[in-house]
Length: 276
Image (tube, rainbow, N blue to C red; front, top):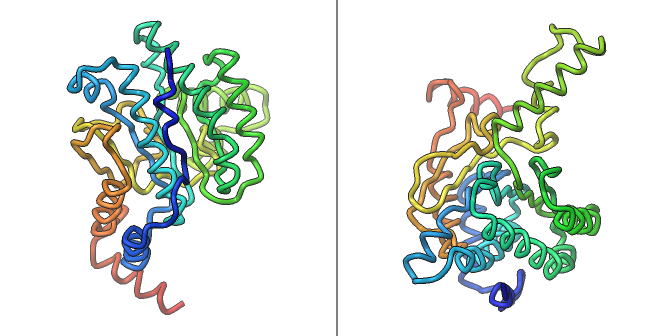
């Protein structure tokens, strides 16, 4: 399939827009920004169906949404962005669609890798990478190597990923350590499990966004999203842009994140911290 439509524009493609700069400044000044944003990019197929296009054309159209959101997060100073790109359940889709998605992924990475590097974005991958085709793994490893020393936005793409798989592989790792006598049962705690997840070293996402009007998290970051603020939007992913991202962040900034405390306890805690 011809993927040329996916490359009609580039990440970090234009000079700063004064109006957009003001919006970003207001968001940064209004309240604390989420350190980690995770997005379930859903609705490519339904977007395509509404427009009389193929599902693959819907996935191609979603590339521009990725570009704009990555750019906006980098410009805002958000430190981590995780995009749910391909789930373990997606392997059940038609072989032709899977093959086209893998080709699209390779083309996007090859085309945009140096642009990511020039803009200080570091690429990571989470998921059961061994299931991916060899040419996909090769392109991913090359892009990761190229961007590994960048210090800006950490962009993680979840490929062949599921939350249940993530927890299961962490449990297997811990069981092997216990069986080998290198770890005792009393040493198993939340911190140990987190250190064995594919997201180790990353903070849990404070904001989890799902597009397309579905109200579920679809086996994504199950452990990590225990206290994430979840934002649902009816917008299909190919139509999602920085303006919708800003709406999600504004909504996040209005929420009171109590973590099991009462509002009064939270206020007392913040007052104590401000005096330290």
